[in-house]
Structures are given as structure tokens and as C-alpha cells.
Length: 409
Ligand code: PLP
Image (cartoon, rainbow, N blue to C red; front, top):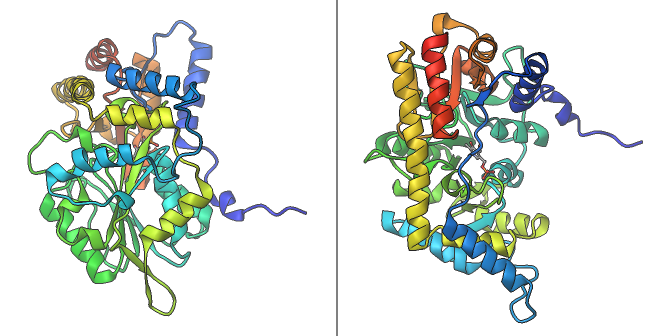
């Protein structure tokens, strides 16, 4: 008899975006002519930049020729890409990294979900509430949590409420947390953290010998001066932090798949006798066992993001989405909504009118103006009463959606 991993049975039935899709499909069946605009799921709409496409094509040609064919590459990524990542994303911010501290992967989703594997099951984790659901669900699957309660919160997870009162910034945990997931710019709230605030987290982690799992998937959207782009800008972070980055939202790689994770050699976790172990060789061991690298054409394409044309084209794409964010933010504010995010992130987090439940607001928006968003409750108990819109639609659809919300609700 085969036994199931019972930790999977602790997870609530449907992932947020499957439930959204179910409701939209049902609505479409009943209203086949409805002109639905999707500002819900966080996928991009702009194509890959031309410099990236050229590099990918060239790499595919190389793969088709005897002299330049490549088989398995290094599991942790080709050096030609890693060096560009270090030189462009970190050196200019005064961050020194060595080549073996960067691990190229097929996505920040897989990395943020898989990284917990190298930690013991007795660690207590802390997450923001609302939260990108992958951090929680991957730890539930691993067996690091207890059961879920009626509010959707799991035993043995410390939830750090992000509220209007604390400016949507997770408060430091009052008790010891061993693994701390932070995401800035934040999905779903679109909010950022200052250097001073991030320093408090690094200090907390150093005092408690915790590890911060810092998700910077939206770093490229930061517009304001003074907002840290990397946790390694903070003194001492190399001892206590790992950082996840992605080409998905930066350069349109949601379908092409490429990301990377920084694991400094100083970051450590401890065994039961109290001896310290560097996480870097453990992650290398994990990746070389379970992952065979990102395809050569995709890594060649990712390297082109850092060429002069690539940088310019990526900037144009991000500017386009951030103009959408401005249209959403301003339009909603003019219509009297209380709005967060959308300044350094492609997400806009709005308070539902009259404290309406977020799924009720979802249905209202879908039925009355045919606009799809993401209900805040899907991101955690403290997301209830809020709603997320994304800036990733086309300009025309973004403008149309906001006009409908302004005039039709
Ligand atoms: N981290 C956050 C906070 C995200 O919002 C997303 C995607 O929506 C990811 C990671 C996943 O990115 P990737 O496409 O690289 O897997």
C-alpha cells in the first residue's frame, strides 16, 4: 500500500488563482459576450525584448550545429550569465559576490519553494500576512507546520500582520523565528521597506541566528531613491540572508523561465549539537542532485538583458507597466478608494469600499464592470477587506478597466 504525504492534505483545496479561474469561467459561460479585462493574475503581457529574442535565436542556432552544440551545462548556471548578474545587479550597489554564490534557476517560484528543504523541520517560520502563498504552502508540504485554522492560518507559523496602522510593514516577531520570509517590493501590497527598517531585520536575524529568505523578484520596479534593491546593501546581511531574483517580471521571462538565488558563503544554520553549517554548499548539493540547469538558449537570452540594448528595452517595458500602475493608482484615488503600492511595484492594493469582503468585491467587480482582480483574502487573513490589481495588462485595457471602475461601480 502506498501512503500519501499527509502534509499535502493539510492544504486548503484550491490555490487562489485556480478559484479565480473557476469563477471567471463560470461567469463567461453565463455571459459569453462579456468583455472581460484581467488585472488579476500577475503575468506580463509585453513580449520579450528584441535583444533577448536575438540572443535566444542565436543560441538555438548554436545548439543545432556540431561545433557549437552544448549538452548538460553546470547545474548552477553558466559563468557568462553569472558574471553579468554580479557586474550589473550587485557591483554598482557596492555588493561583492563571488561566482559560486549565484545559482541560476528556472524561477523564483521554484527557488522560494525549494530552499526550505535544506532547513530542519523544527524551525519556526515567520511570514508577512498577506503573503505570496508559495512560502507557506511549500513549508506545509514539507511538514514544518501544524494544521490550518478557520482563518486559513497554520499552527507553527508566525504571521506578521501588515496593516494600514503599520504601513503594511511586517513587525519584528515578538518570539524567536528561525526562517523569515520577506518580500520587497511586496507582492501583494506593492509596498517597500526602508534601509533602516531592513537593518532592524538583519540585526534581529543576527541576534537570533535566524535566516532571512529575501524575495526581491520586483526589485527592478523600484523608482524612489533610498529604497534598498538588495538585502546585501545592509551591513551584516551576508551572514544571515539569502536573496531570490527573477527575470520574469523584469524582462518578460514568465514563459521563458530564468531566475537566480544568491547564497553568500557566510550564511549558516546549525545542527542539533550547535555546530554551524554554511548553506551555500548545502544548496549546491541540493541543486546538483535535483536540478539539471536552465537551458542554454534561455541563459543566453537572460545574459542579453544586460547588454546595452537589452537594458534600454527592459527599462522601456518596466516604464510601460509603471505608467499603468500610475493610471490605476490615480484613477482609483480619484474615485475615492484608499490605495497602497503602485509606486515602486507593479501591484496596487486597495481597500474594498465599505469593508466589503474581498471575494464579494471580486464578484461585484466581475459582474458589474467585467474587471478581474485578486481578492486580498487569498493572500492571508489580513488581506481580507483588500483587493489586488496588477499593472501588467496592456495600456488600452488598463485605461478601460479603470474608467469602468470609476464610472460603473
Ligand atoms: N516571488 C514573488 C513574490 C512573485 O510574485 C512571483 C511571481 O508571481 C515569483 C516569486 C515567481 O517568479 P518566477 O516567475 O521567477 O517563478
